[in-house]
Length: 592
Image (cartoon, rainbow, N blue to C red; front, side, top):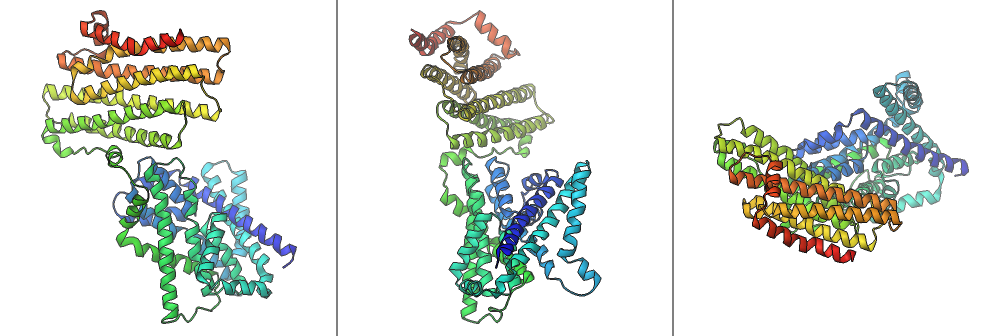
């Protein structure tokens, strides 16, 4: 094997991988982003999920890619962990499509028709037509079709180059001995794992094995362990993407790993059990591209059938590996909103209110998690905030739709008014959740710029953080318990937070002018202050509505707040003074 053959092999591998990549990208673009939409609808059965997983992976030609998408969807709460199991099992079948296409290279014959359908004949033509579409046509859909054709042609051109590059190996004694050693199942599996981890595609690994089959040295005994090892190897790519994912996101990637490892080990054990008991007549027979493709597909189907009746075992195993506390399980659950309760509006309203309470606690929790990130970034916390924010957004839609449907029922005046107020509360808490995300993003901006606040700014933020946590606790508890006395404590605290924010803003602008603070951190600090002020404003809106509902007055929140400010009660003044001592006095002592 000379340098020409080596460069031909390397060039063939490069073209093969590149062709597979751009063909998959073109197919994904042509799908118009529908792939994730399809995955989101997998709500019925594991078998349906398997079918969809197979089809989607057949399109993008990457089981790892499909699993990465699943991790993202589970991470965001759009797909459940149970739904992802079927998709992952189907992904392993879908990724075998490339091998089935490559087997066409084994077609031979003297007729014109057989010659035309051989990849070495039509691949260059398909690539040329695809290039014309991709380069010269502006229509986006046709351009995507051109990209698919170009990738298809490049893939098979690379396959042809690989065949040429490995052709001298059929006469190599060392290579023959190497493949004889591959009949050792452990060694064969390790080779399959390592090669697949390096090139991050089981389809590509099997494609290389199909190219090597042209040497006439690849037997069933040497190929089967390598193929099963390729299944295991492809499960490591999604594991590289789970940093910062939620616990369910990490479990999804682990399900893929467990499915491939357990399935491959069981299949390998079954094959060798048959081999040493009944015997396998074709064990030493030479494999061609078709037989390798068939083994690749059949092993994936067999693993799927093995786990189909007990797919829940995989999710339970992943949950044992990454366990949840009872508090987390309860916190990340979606509320149940049963429309059958519309027949009893009072019960339905209580159910809706319970859902809004859960939403309020999630929004408040995100704020308390986001502010410490300004001082120290933590990837797990960022992931937790994103998961919770996605749940808050989904809850806003579901609760609002539920309440709007309730208005079609026969409600009395009080019930109708409560529906309206609950819709207002949903909006307030959703906005609080958005501002928490804004603060988190400001913390990420600081990390990206490798900047940090001065010690003075950190101490100031500590006071602001304590005030925010206090007002959120008061607001959420008052709402949950319908405690008007507690709700009346919110407005004086909100007024103190406004003063606190104004003073912090003035102090920071002074530091900017004196050059004691950089422009980057200065802008972030001011944005954080704005978001904190907005959070306290929404808390004030919630509390004012609670006070108004108890008084039976149909005032808007702004009118009620103005009334409290212009005619403050004794309790109001006492609460105001206590908040001033808690938050403004420490700030004044720092400034002194």
